Length: 159
Image 1 (cartoon, one colour):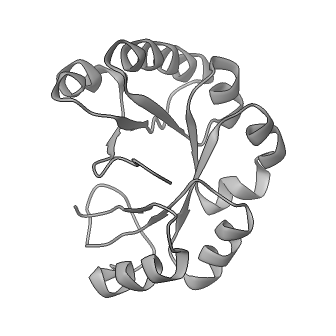
Image 2 (tube, rainbow, N blue to C red):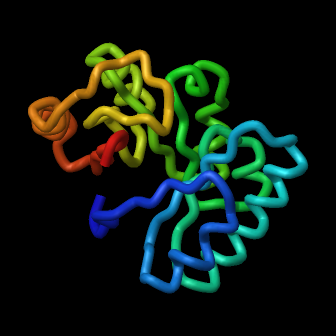
């Protein structure tokens, strides 16, 4: 994919966007956890409006139905979410798809969906999210990039 941003911010609340969007972000993921569906919908609507004002694309983590409903640019799915998401419906709505991977088996599962990007993590140790996986390290980043070719690769965790 041409022109995929080199920096991809992940935020847990739309309140962060006014601080970061003026810096020229082109892609940001809204990863809201522990809120009601209505609160998440409100966050998505506000984030989409702010991102449009700044020419930034919005990635919604997990909530693919809300991402379709609000006309977002991307949906990011973890492996568990991939099991229950309707990928055909997501693609038919014109959303791009990113998928998290942590093992070779997960990478193969993700590639079968023909995503628009792959995320690998955690690259380094992180305290922000409980992870059952050990840090992947830069050697794994290199290995993944060789395996996926021109598909964008996002390194997450401990960065």
